[in-house]
Image 1 (tube, helix red, strand yellow):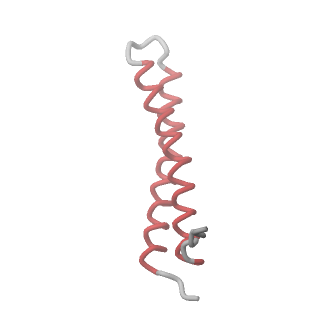
Image 2 (cartoon, helix red, strand yellow):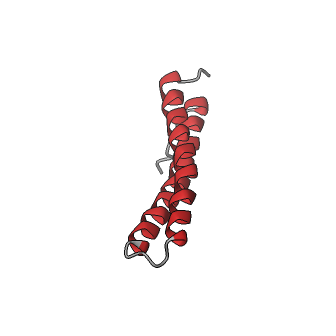
Length: 79
C-alpha cells in the first residue's frame, strides 16, 4: 500500500494551522481576562473560545487526513 503524498501534505498543512491556533487561542483568552473592565471583554472572550474550539477540531481533522493518506479511506459496507 502506497502513501498518497498529496493528501499527506494537506494533513500536515492542517496540523500547521492547528499549531498556530493552539498558540493564538490562549493568548486571546488571556487578553480578554486581563481587560475584564473593557467594553469589548465579551466579544474578545467569545472569539478566543471559538478559536480554541477550532484548534481542537482542526487537530482532529488533520490527524484524520494523515491517517487517510497512510491507510486509505474506509470503505462503507452496503447491506
